[in-house]
Image 1: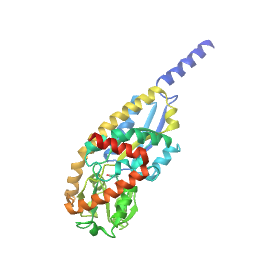
Image 2: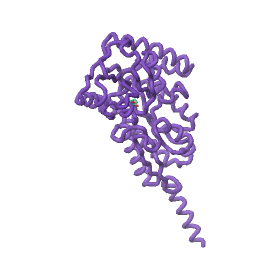
Image 3: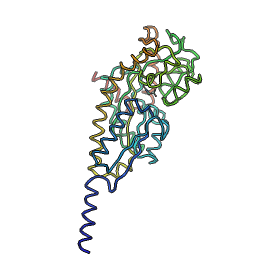
Image 4: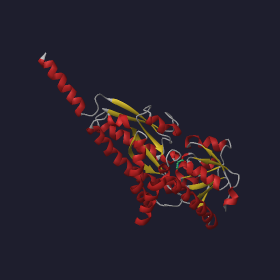
Length: 325
Ligand code: PCA
């Protein structure tokens, strides 16, 4: 009997020491195509955690919105329907302006500037996520955002009345201010929205246009480098608190690797996908000066609106970014 008790105690200690109390599988919903770099980095992250915990915590990714559509992922993780997930933060700017700190037009236009902004803003966004019952793990920027159209566009007046696919509060507002007609569509549904005429234009990276083969429907891509939005990976806070320290450490280590890999992959994918759009037959060019000036004026309005909504914390982030740069 004594031996059995000793054996049971030893087994329990082994189980705790090696990660979670018993082997678990966590499903990780993701919104974008399996071949997109965010999804590949997420899959590598999952593998890293699975291997790092010797299979005690297996993370299985589900790309393309196959487990939950993009616009449901955050809520699903908050409520514990999924323990972990990835989501475009700025799609939730309506819940808290800080989720849209990466979508202030023309505040940053390169990866380097964007990373500097994120060094300042990231910890604040992590606090907001924690208020939403989410533990922030890592995030990765999309390449700079430009405009897709089915005709040549030289001014904001040329945009009037065009049906515009939006993915966030900022993109919908951009449409309103350019007198386009916004319709919110997830990237997974983008090809269909273009094919059926629900949308005839949008703002995004070369990456999303390439992933969705938009040259089948659209003819022009204008580089404007309006902003670089981020996808974030987060864990349900109760699930996170239920992990032991060793498992948490593995997750944080894998997250740090994923953040680095993601940034490098995003940079590489930028030119690769712009070339891909050209090969598909699209005209890929920088927007003309007149158009850029008009868009910057709209950007200034959006910046004022964001600052008015984001209060002291928002102002402190922008002031701190601008004084450092
Ligand atoms: N692609 C995502 C968000 C930003 C981007 O470049 C999308 O269009 O949904």
